[in-house]
Image (cartoon, rainbow, N blue to C red; front, side):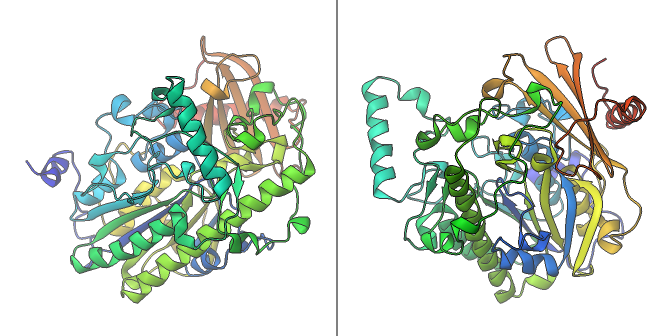
Length: 507
């Protein structure tokens, strides 16, 4: 049985009478660790002209949220249309094919309806690829390691990397420093500004390959779903020098709230372990211990914004080629970030919390026949993307999907919409809370509030709550303590929301 025939047996099919005469292509652009701090989102200090132009040609969602603010759970949820509790994927190590082997990903749904699905870069978590989701093997670039976190171009960093490899081998520890794909997990400096062309780093070289692939896909005369996953601005903040030169470090704004939220429980904050994995920040304090220096904060923010501008240029090149090939008018373009990222906010560096700064993501959709130049302020979730793309392409919605198609919002971004969105975070593994206990935090975000319940995961006991008034306290700096009636109402909504999704919260 062919792959397409097998997927047809799973109940995937085209909506009767709904498929357009010519099925639209999909260009699916993922950007790792990209927070919605771009020109199109009102951040005038960030140079992002090409993503801004994409936003003006489509719909910009200003209040889009991920289901869990860390790579693997967020991406697995988006690609399957299922929430982390349904997938039982809450960390970086769990393969959803082992916990939910019958899950049908969005690309499998498109493949079953005549599409060719191809990919390059990081769509699923990079060390947990899913070959079943693509019509052909994932594209890899010769001369680059699979994990571009290991890519450095300065002499100092490359020499250090090779020295570390030799140390591991000499100590007989090489195996534990190599991932399941046979690549080294090595980190040198947290930032790098080498005077090199764009394609000296992985994301630029990847764009070269993606541009060639677009032409190949067009020439097949078959609708395609092409996933292009960019790695920057994920750490390390490595970008060609010309993108660093776009910014004056002394004028880069610092975080307006470099402190932990008042009244928040200790497990609510992450421990900066991601940043502390780099040799020049190995001794960085946790949020509960202290802060990096102002000079270090400016360096990191400079590196992050330079990386954003670098990726912005690559997205522009990709979109230019889409137009050059005559594909723009019949291609759905989606640009999304898998979660936010703290740049000193709440005294943190990284993602991995339930706060707005981590759960809110950029999301832009441009679709044939849909109005351009729109901004939508309604609450949406990444789990909504799967049914949205299916509806845009005339593909039947699978019954198990836990999101809501956003197509009505593409037609009218001001219409009444869902009252709340949901995120969660499992505080375990290397991101365990200060007391060493594993906790799960469940969050509901309404138009006016965020409410979080923290459970001790071993016995599912409710141990802490948080409540933020988004209207009066948009940065979530103070958890309210004396709002019992409001908290009870939000708790009911939180539990009701999980019941609607086919599951219940502990207790």
